[in-house]
Image 1 (cartoon, rainbow, N blue to C red):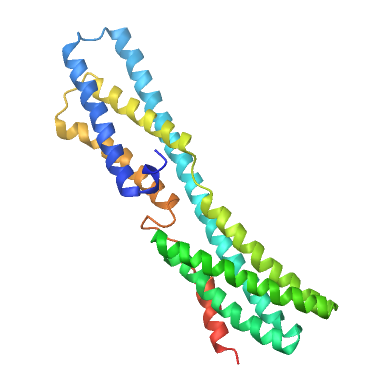
Image 2 (cartoon, rainbow, N blue to C red; image 1 turned 60 degrees about the vertical axis):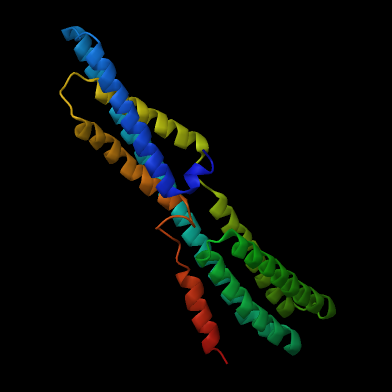
Length: 254
């Protein structure tokens, strides 16, 4: 299940097939059974309505979770760009040699962070993370050395800005790891299965095409939820607008 929910198209097809199978099974069992009594039919319709309502609530709740996580990832990208900008602006507070070197490394660092958002290939992403770690170590080493040699308030400001850069990357990574729990996905699919089974079992004439309609309607928002919740695999992506603007701003600086 964990690997499945990371691929929106696959979970859409799985959800569609699962729900159509449920509707077909319910329809087949109803045709073999005897008609319901009036009292039983009323109870059945009540259960069907409650199940469909519960499915709608769970889908809506899951969509809200996915959107909130998307907003969190976007906010972390903006915070990261602001932290890099602040460190770049404060770099001249360091001794001249260290300040110039820090700005050059921050420019490379910003480019790597942009690639982090745009790359989907795991091998390339691993290389980007390794290069980012090395740049962070180099930046921290430069600032630490300057702070030891010249422990002034101005150097402390530059060091604090560099710490914010490192912390902001950690916050970004945590936001990308924050996904809808597997248990929520399982519950959503189970309720959708039950709703389609009861829908197929209701005493109304239905063709295979009509049995396909409700599974398709429910699978569409499930696909959207999975797409938003998969930062790299879906159609909805986090575009690093703030980091791109930061790179253009750095390029325009003397």
